[in-house]
Length: 138
Image (cartoon, rainbow, N blue to C red; front, side):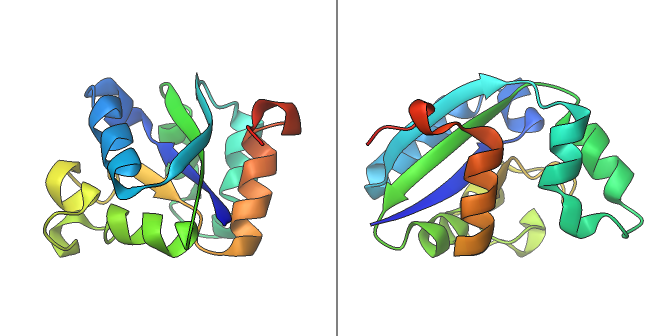
């Protein structure tokens, strides 16, 4: 069993897509072991996107992710990291495979509805950033 961090971004929450995305996750067989709707602080957003700090779009990322509520999730299942990333689809929804969350629901690269950890290291870091141990099911 593997755990990963997943998020429904502010555009997805604003558009009321949370139930559909959660249904897709559960139908795939992943167990939601942590779930909360929250506002992300500026400091947490900067930590979350730290690998992009030197890129010109860093400020836009931080502004976007702090601009409305998100749904933070801890998912558990076999191959959860790559599996969830596959379910999300490419960052640019125009390049996402049909049937993926982003192909079906996202509008632009900047408003692409979801986030998922890209490795076991980032999953561990992001889960700790958004959840305390007592917030996760055993």
